Amino acid sequence: MFAVRSSFTRDVEAAARALAEIEPGNRWSEVDSTEETLGALSAAINGFDWRPRAAKAIVLVSEGAIRDESDRLSYDELFEAAASTGDVAIFPVISTFFAEYYYPLATGTDGIVVPYQELVPQPSMLSSEPAKPALDSAREALTAAMEHIINRPVALLANPEYIANPGESIRFDASASYVVDSEISEVAWDFDGDGAYDRLGAELVVEHTYPDAFDGEVRVRVRAANGTFTVANAPVHIGTYIAPVKPGSPTPLELGAAESGDSIRLSWEPQDQLAAQWLIAVNGVNLGVTDGDLQSVRISDIDRAAATELSVAGVTAAGLVGEAATITLGPANDAGAGPAAEEIAVTGSDATLSFIPGLVFLLLGTLLVISAQVVIRRHRA
Image (tube, rainbow, N blue to C red):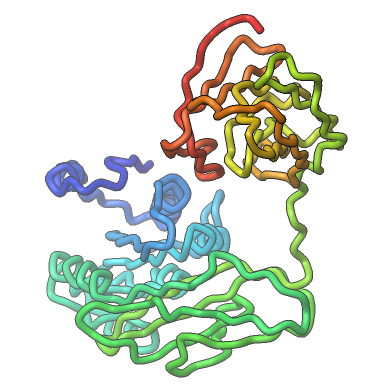
């Protein structure tokens, strides 16, 4: 069995206390060790709140042999999870006696084995696989693993995703990659994500064309002169990308009879059932959203001295904004200067939203930035 003692933290003392609670066991069964090791790695990769686009690594300190898969999880499934999380590299810190069992974990995630001398040294285990020279103690090996992680470069791709058609050239840009206290010595590109690097050199920006449909990922490995390296990846969709469906433009968009000199009713008919909300805008300024089952709003305090453009757009539950329908309200002959506040009363609701222009806040996560401060007044419309 395994247990999560602590999630990610900047509290060094808390992390030290969590480490102090861990006591070494004496598990020599490959079955037990495999189940616990792969289970703990899966929980860390899939369950922790990894920071997007950050270099990610796991230091695995173990003391027994493991098999290439458990009853519940295979290496390939673990590697897929590590890649989809953003290339989590695994660095096993292990006795030379068991080091050979951990090379698949390290190489499959672009990490390295950091062995230390204990029990019966096995130098032959280190001859053909990426590893640091065997150190004298587990403490030295753990320190070496942490130094390797800290000193390795940070690989960054400019785009989180790449979309094109077969035959179109794609520009892959990793020029934002960097390394501290060293320099980038080699850049390797794997255009189809199969683990075999297709182009080696020093180019951080390359062009590549996919002749056929492809749905996979591109990987770039950035190696530094200090011997460390890291990998970044991004999805690639060639001729396979299906754009998400957005709400259609609501039509017809109609202006109702004025209920007062500065009030109008705006009505519309949805084209589909995709809108969870309706985004209302006046003169290009987003005022707010209404529930998706409503089809009209009353807008008051309109400045009629000039023409006023009003628009309505559907917003899906996922936050995708559809095509807006727009209508223009002409100026009134006797209109004067408008008041300082604009008010939308949503028909059929029990709230009036008052919007005071000039202040900026964030609505619907990262979807909308609205130039207004919202005041909600409860009433029965």
